[in-house]
Length: 216
Image (cartoon, rainbow, N blue to C red; front, side, top):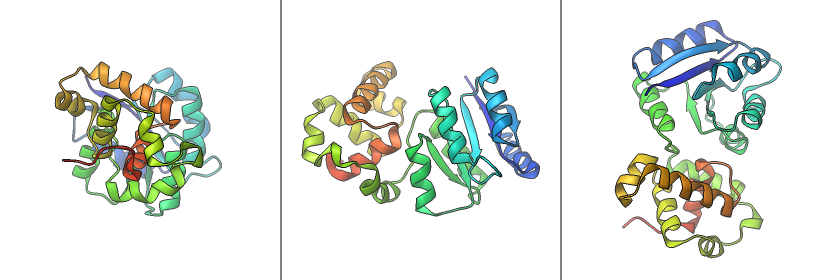
């Protein structure tokens, strides 16, 4: 099954460039695009895309604010922020509002495809280095120490959290633990509820903090 994708960018040429990159992989089907937050909010609910590629800098309502709005209305949609910025503050803002990914526009097109496929497959493609920079901001005082966090999880949940920290997709976790992908998804829901986090990027950051077992 392919990935229904929607593009949000106020620049027409930028939208065309994204379409051209995605056109290199039949897995991605561009079902629509918008040049403003207002247009995106009008079109996206009716098109039911799996993935939204969101420019961070737009006049009026920017991509971060629009991501928050969409996540409030359609929490199941995956959103990847598109930017030319390497500023960690932008990455933190994106993760805080629930974005699944953060893609720098200057990356090679082949890297775009592999990255977006990973997001579509349920992975959290944020490197350990980036996750480490998120830790102090994303791990709230209410979550307590790493040891206290770990105590909230079952051994299986800690195992899954460790695999998430290493960027494994749901499929890869299922294969590694010899369980179904649905079982992995159920475990993830329980983990996020116990740790009071919104998405896998925050889980990865928390795992780097020490809540998950180290890789053997």
